Image (tube, rainbow, N blue to C red):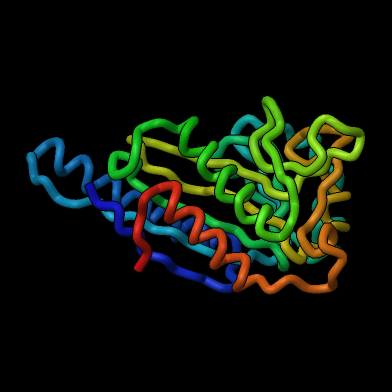
Length: 232
């Protein structure tokens, strides 16, 4: 079992280019697993954790409903935003500047083979990180991701999640709003859930800008503890 994870911060990078790169890493891990099974090669599989920030983009998961995007192609162009249908779970999601996106590409055979547990650990990483900023974040029953004021009329989502897994290898991940432009969320029904607001860490803290590098450090600290992993 290899619990070493290669950390890569891609900075600001186009969504499709990042998706293609994820696929490349994902397929490399899967091919190693196939080789191990067919040839009893006993090769170690690699793990990756990508941090990235995307230009304005809307993505629709496999089970998503396109009607949850409330603008047409021309309106997207006017907002300098793009749109992609993707092979993750979940409905519609927005990514943009001021949002920390994390893509763990892991061979769960190195950790635990339980997708439900994997998602709960990702949520827990976010919850523990936000607690360091004095926020009580929670899960919301039946709704993947991380929320504030669950069960009240003021419930609002601060982190979206959507993953894909095949042969126990993961891709896609989470999107945490840190300094996000919340106006872009008005152009969709977030995750297909009507009547739920979206928020960002800087808004919750009442500050103009939150140090994103510091947030990343906290996320990695909690991820490392939860997954009993090492980054390099």
